[in-house]
Length: 485
Image (tube, rainbow, N blue to C red):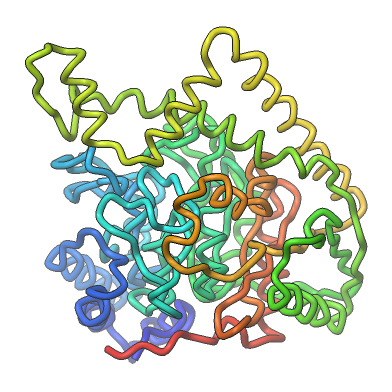
């Protein structure tokens, strides 16, 4: 049997009808039974996790209560968890062991959550399908011949397959939302800054944001509640208004809620099954008293271009430190230092990482900086302004997460542009820095479809309350893949 929701586990742990140690042992049994096929996990330390579980049980017996005390969680392998490898899905970090905990990991552990494993991901979080891990891809539990989405593929698969009720991923341009849509779980990309990036290996610093993953919005709120807050080690971090409402999330009253439908998100290109699932989900909102309003986000057409110019430019800068000198892989070369650096990067980085480094270096080079990078910054400002204008008219926005359902392996790896276009509905919000989440909205041809809900900056709590109200009126989030363990 798969694990229940985090809220189910929370109630059972608090009532004393379930122990954390039993939860953790069952999780490892399920990983051993299923992960040979799904390949969601890259590393784990069972003895350490069981020790943390026993500590959590002792805290529970002593009467202590926190939103996540005793709950197992899976961590994407670009977060530092001291004592375990952090590979970022890349060979260039072979042999590197994290010397400290990321802030969000530390806050989870301090609150009594029990990390189980480090999850598979696209190399350095660069990918939309999960196919770019140096250690082989994770697989979609609904259909292992199809991609789980990326880059937080292993984290999402871990929740969808029932390894744990909570997982932590990161979202740069859609990396928790796209796989959540493909695998039928709920995932949040918070307002930029409300979760510290300290200890998250940087891909694109102005876009990266940790994101919790779970079956439901109510479950997300449990983990989110203990991770939020400014961090002196991350100068971009901020406090989140209303965070005290997260630990006991309530459904929003949808009567009178104005839901904006961006015209640019509902044009050609949506698969018929995705469109019908979205329309059915929107009818649920209307039945609960919400009002649908068409809005315009006119600069959406520039989002993919602007995102990949900015993202690759930051990738070029951030990944320059992986040179064989300080940590990870080192390839000796008789040609001296330049040969060692070149050899290490050539062997250590995969093709997608190399592609993005080269594109970013080109964008930042003399003669092209103004033509590409600066123009992309201006486009980003226009996209953010579109959202500001839309939120002057409506309370939240709704639309697709992806134009289609999970696609078969190998379908898009030969065409990088086609792969990048899978992010067409997720990168605009990343550029604007606003909160958004993917919520299960039904099935199309037996595969999950997600609806994306988007709110103005720092409206994360309200957005989760709206999602909770939708899930209280539907059962899409309760659908699970058929797996035998």
